[in-house]
Amino acid sequence: MTDGEGEGEGKLAFALPERPHLLVTGGAGFIGSAFVRDVLARRDGTRITVLDKLTYAGNRENLAPALADEEQGARLRFIQGDIADPDAVAPLVAEADAVLNFAAESHVDRSILDPEAFLTTGVIGVHVLLEAVRRTQSSRPIRFLQVSTDEVYGSLGQDDAAWTESSPLAPRSPYAAAKAAGDLLVRSYVVTYGVDAVITRGSNTYGPFQHPEKLIPLFLTNAIDDAPLPLYGDGMQRRDWLYVSDHAGAIEHVLRRGRGGEAYNVAGEAELPNREVVAALLERLGKPWSLVRRVEDRPGHDRRYAMDGAKIHALGWRNRVPFPEGLGRTVDWFIANREWWRAVRSGEWDVYYRRQYERRLATSTNAER
Ligand code: NAD
Ligand code: TYD
Image 1: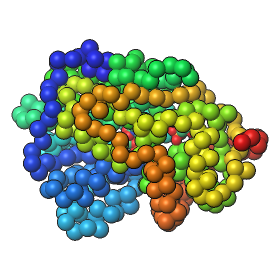
Image 2: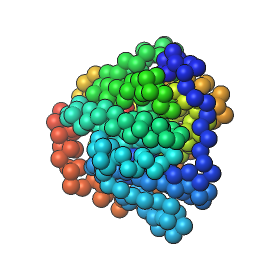
Image 3: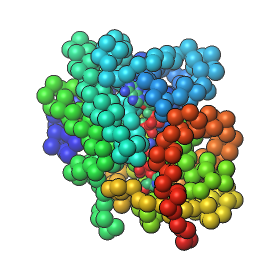
Image 4: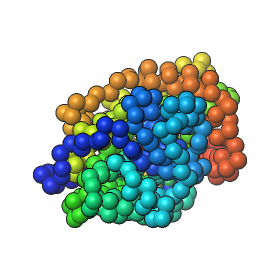
């Protein structure tokens, strides 16, 4: 499946019931909560159960807009629990029409500091979910969607062609390796047990409610406070930026229209060097480049990500939000929602920030523009 070998083994598009019940794991995180908010706001009768461990990255406040609305809140159930816990997972999968797995440890830098949780959630957790889906499918149809990432493909050189779904998996960080392992487990359950599963591989996602550990919200929130912006190495690493509502929409599209057993790239169609992203956000904020500090690079830093999105385009899906518009919306949201990010940047945050940046900032140099 992930490399096209499985063509023909999978099932066709999945017919969800008219008022489906979705199990959304990791639904209190950044992209999962956007998916939940967007689906509930459509008021089409869809019911959602969120299963989320509420790690440092999970936040019930991310679901507040849906919970504040009586009609939407009535269709949303929140359960705190771990996808690696079969007792928590089995009864919830048994009553769902589809399972969408957003749950993961999601930050590369943390995977370099402490890889273990990445494996527990990304490998054991995915396996527990797949086992529950396998048991449920013996009595009725159920689809599994694994939310994956372009990072499973590794790193591109400047002149390399963008990755297609047939590109080899060549992860380079513990985060990417755990995600690739999850993809391979999904593939094995499709081939061996006939599980109806699809995979989406999204590129770097940004937007409201993103945890401020990631590049765009970290630099935005630091810049609002006139704090230094730690740019790794030469800042010429390239990422492809995908607005969060586009990512959430693509996932729903693949859930309904994707061919069982297949993986789909979700490209942002906005490949930029980090320096340009930082310059654009400083310009939007009206803050000076002198805030940017060149710091010691991330070990094994992937140089470039770029994906070919032709396969999902052929399913009838297209990006809607160009990068300048998405960045503008994101900047406005972070300016208007300081309480949200100040609360997230407290407690555990200080310990992480010191570990990741104290020495780097102490040894930083000017980042020439
Ligand atoms: P996030 O870190 O904001 O959210 C992850 C959520 O999963 C949190 O709510 C957390 O509490 C929950 N979680 C973690 N471990 C869990 C467990 N064992 N059981 C239950 N819940 C658990 O991450 P995100 O940025 O929203 O990413 C969501 C998914 O999308 C991840 O699978 C990630 O690999 C993938 N992805 C992210 C990006 C990106 O740029 N952020 C890009 C492509 C793919
Ligand atoms: P990040 O948001 O962590 O996403 P990913 O590592 O999954 O691509 O980082 C995006 C890019 O920004 C990546 O090239 C690393 C770089 N970066 C910095 O230069 N400084 C930082 O403090 C962070 C968090 C990221």
